[in-house]
Image (cartoon, rainbow, N blue to C red; front, side, top):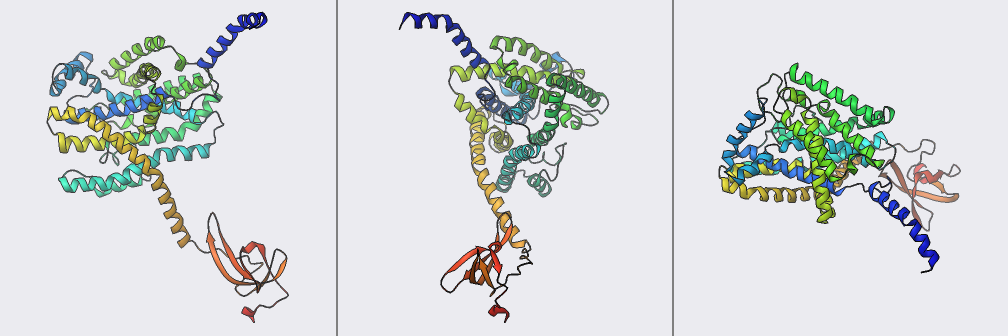
Length: 489
């Protein structure tokens, strides 16, 4: 290497390194991956923890859910309820599982974030966006529902156990034709399905919120959404007489006031704002792990304690979603980096929605038909249920395109049979036996006419000139006015 080259590189090496750091820390919107490994890791972890949460609730017969009686009283309740799950290490492990429901709010925040990334930096086209998102939510749901009901009915008949009645089966199979925020139509089939109307609502209002985030600015939209959400939740607690979904107590309105999207609007909007900052190469996604934990842990602790007080129900979900997401981001970002499991996390995350839709079926049938009250069998079943649910999710996701194609083909076939045949062009009035011209060539005779149904109906005509026969589109023919066909003579 010449002295000149060494001198040039020595003077400019800092620029090269700075440029590399900027690429690593602040990728452009064109080069950013649309699926972040640590984010997909949070998705599947949340789905598995919800499975264990529902398992623990069912096994202990709902012996503990948070109550608005203060921190100390709830710790005592947890200790008593945990006695059913064993002593020592087993009881300690069970403690965080009591709060697996908190990942529902993490799902809401991630939904707002993911919808922004799904735009891939392109302008939002409302019609195509809504069509794509609704199908993304409903196709897996329909697949799970249509496959699950026959299986549930068969298991119920063989084991003399519970199966949804005919009305609730119809409601589940035709959702969202029958749309219900309260979950009364879907709960008898699968309790966690109350979440599906919520995410449909968020997909529906996302274009409006996306517009406001540009018109008002993301920060102003977050502030307004926090005010709206907190005011609504205050009414939900003190005026409407409701309680959050994870609390099992008797209140005038039950959990109904906390089911509409407005009860979690601020969390969803925050996800949108974080995604916008991320696309600009800034925000909490780029925080170092120590900073993320330094902010996330205190926020989570405040939200965690707030859930044990009635006043805290106004803001606890919002704080829990922020703190828990930041902490999980650190954990899964570290795992994906050091264990090199980015591809595995992305693959698992792709199946997390189907996993969520299925998991309670597995939990309910396993605990009621196999585990019953056997503690050792319960702990043995936990990993089995987690893996079995994943396998079922893979089958559902594999079957979904086939069912979709079959449904479309069935619809097209039925539509073709029932649709009224279109009228031929009146100006031509082409009929069997007519003498016609084809692309300027005369002497052709129409010997057969058949209807074709594709995107739109039209006629194909078989024509013969004495030597050869062709199938042509009716629009390429003109009736020969100088000849009188044999069919009309």
